[in-house]
Length: 113
Image (cartoon, rainbow, N blue to C red; front, side, top):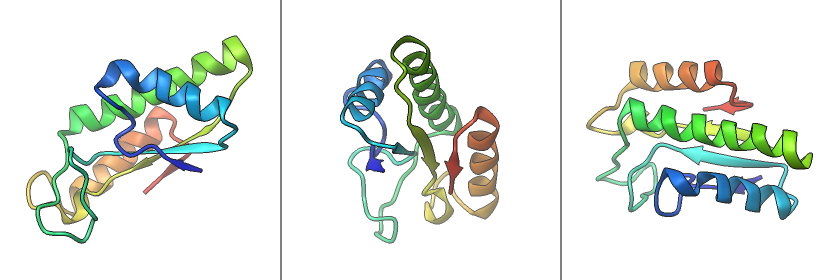
């Protein structure tokens, strides 16, 4: 399982490349999360997460890319969707974390937390 961090290097347009690179390298899965850049330890002060829409968009893009790779190249990997919003002072809290986990699950992420 590889840590994909925010899942993107430079924006949504690079998610497919990231997913494909991990799959071609032989990873069984990739973890995508909802922190802003620069990423912080989830226990650190200043933890910040993206909006619901962006978090869901990241996971959706990763799943679409994974599905395209399954169909076109027979490559596969588990998409792990993680939220750090539980402790975020803005856009955070337990209810928000539960909402995001449900949304990630409903999209088809293999593991959510």
